[in-house]
Amino acid sequence: MIYRSKAPLRIGLAGGGTDVSPYSDQFGGAILNTTISLSAYATIEPLIENKIIVEALDRNESQQFDLLPLLPIDGTLDLLKGVYNRIQKDQAVQLPGFRLSTFVDAPAGSGLGTSSTLVVAVLGAFVEMLKLPMDEYKIAQYAYDIERHDLQLAGGKQDQYAATFGGVNFMEFYADKVIVNPLRIKPQYLHELENDLVLYFTSTSRESAAIIKEQVKNVQDKNEKSIEAMHHLKEQARMMKEALLQGNLNEIGLILDYGFEQKRNMAAHISNSAIEEVYAAAKASGATGGKISGAGGGGFMIFYCPNNTRYAVIKTLNNFGGVVRDYSFTKYGLTTWSI
Picture 1 (cartoon, rainbow, N blue to C red):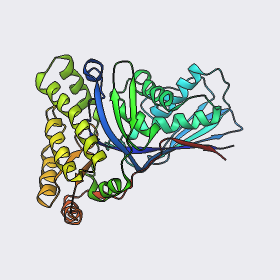
Picture 2 (picture 1 turned 120 degrees about the horizontal axis):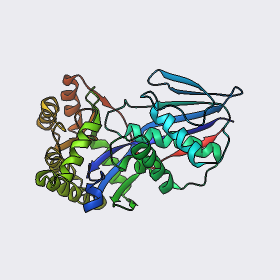
Picture 3 (picture 1 turned 90 degrees about the horizontal axis):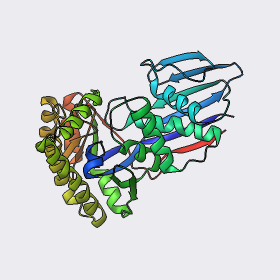
């Protein structure tokens, strides 16, 4: 048997950063996001030999080991090995030799939740292989624990839950729980949002950990400017939810613009001169708002372009050396199967 899984990447529309502890633990966080037709994929192929092969096909990275209970966390393919190590620790099963192969449709550090989505996909392949009794909430929390606690990687919670549940969700984050609220948005509103929202890759990636660590420190140090910005971003998520449910799409760009203004105050290096130049040019071409995706500093940006302004905006963006990516919204989260 071959065991496969896929999990969708996501666009964060509002509230980004309020899912990160300790802000979410102290004040409660809220985020609105939607999954898109870019994914992370994982395949497990059992081997006759007593060895483990882990490989990231999109990164041309591969490692081979004897069949060990724990694989070394050494900076190469740690996300893949971290999932295996946690499965070995928690599940009383004797795994055969296997090859674990992965592929992600967007580069690491691009702001679409690639790392966490990859962890969800790898975990999903093991869940399929071992028939583990885990629902969406358990898979998402398990993936979060692997990434944040076992591997000590900085970040929030939204990506694991978005990848596992899929669709358009309003998520609430607290110290002891996460609540995923699927939004029943009318199809015509979603089609229009998809038409008007341009996804642009700046052709740069960034290390989100430094930005997130500064954000965490700002909360710990009771930095009023940073904390107030997060309060506003949490309110932005509620504003976005109401606009989408009621079909007030003309407000989307303004809500995005409001959020980007607040996000700049969360931590340094979220934006930079290159990002600001692209943002200003997109708005001058007809976009009414936008944002940098993920922690900031590079990666993907999104722009809301109403009334057929998307074509003028895309023409302008092409002058900056990045790439406009085609996408569509997806309804489904983590999907697993065997062949």
